[in-house]
Length: 461
View 1 (cartoon, rainbow, N blue to C red):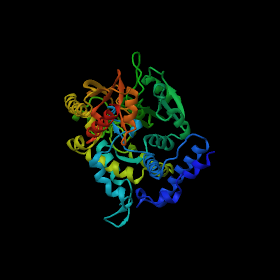
View 2 (spheres, rainbow, N blue to C red; view 1 turned 30 degrees about the horizontal axis):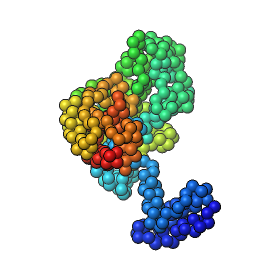
View 3 (cartoon, rainbow, N blue to C red; view 1 turned 180 degrees about the horizontal axis):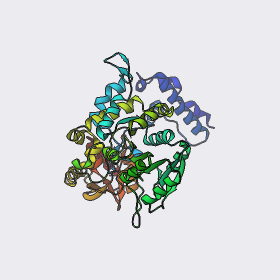
View 4 (cartoon, helix red, strand yellow; view 1 turned 30 degrees about the vertical axis):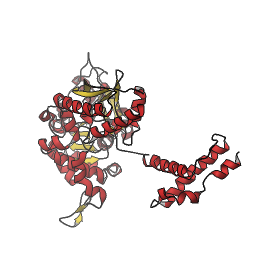
């Protein structure tokens, strides 16, 4: 150990008194300064450094630790992938209109369970439930914290100790190891597999009912598809069979729209109203997918079944918090009016963008990037974007992307440096080029991307 070097390390008080830390939380500065100085001593002891930085350099090191600490945890990112409901990036973005509408709820007290008119206790989900019924045509509704919870609650209340018939082709695993057979077992329901993986007929369900099934379950298969020699039974056909036999049908729709997607030129997908119109007694779907809101599980259907679920002890375990309730409420209010929804619900706006719009946006962004990095190859190219999140897996969304070939660094290094930007920029790599899709960019993202590329261009030169 070099004792001379150890003695040259600035002491704690010297760092604490520096101008750089004036006005900062003293305990935070002290904690990070201690970590930095301890690291220096360890490096000296291990013989890893032969010179000790002066007090100014040490202060910069502490500030870097502060910046690193500030970047830890969940952060806002720029989604340049073209995948609208990107599961790793938080699925549905809420947008400025929705955020402003719920800002007061987020930042202070709210009327979550308080009836302002009567001055008495109210229901946290009364307005949300009213809006869900309005958009779906259901008799009753409720909201929980996610769709997995919605399915689990429905099965726990309606199918515990009962045989439940479901097609083998719908016994799927959906993200995070959410497996239908395991959820059914945990709920207390007894699984009755019907049909084959690729083909299930109505007669298979009839046989199950003859064999003692007391409930039918239909599950949307998310991003899993069977094509070719296959057959399945529609929700409407199952509902007719179930009602003819006096048993309920639960339909896990996975993801559906709150408004008719055809109004925005979007092909594919179902609405919550279609689920109810099919005759299903209970439907369940996610709030943070095609509905375009916060993470939530939405349950709608016949009043007698919803009432029973609300009384189940699990309902409190899986209930939605005030932020979820307020975001969902405001989203559904926007969805009352298609034009308003198209402009202010980002998921709908992004999915509805036409190829012509995206080409124009890609051209504008390419010009900005070319100006920021004049020595790099920047062009636009047609691409295919995705809904993501297990929604609309068979639907392609033609679009355009800015294609970049950086110079002075590898493509992998470019992707990494973009990802490590102060606001992380997540993009796609394809055919030896980096692709930036305007479909998923929010307001101001293009300028931030161009500025960051300008910085990297300067470094590469």
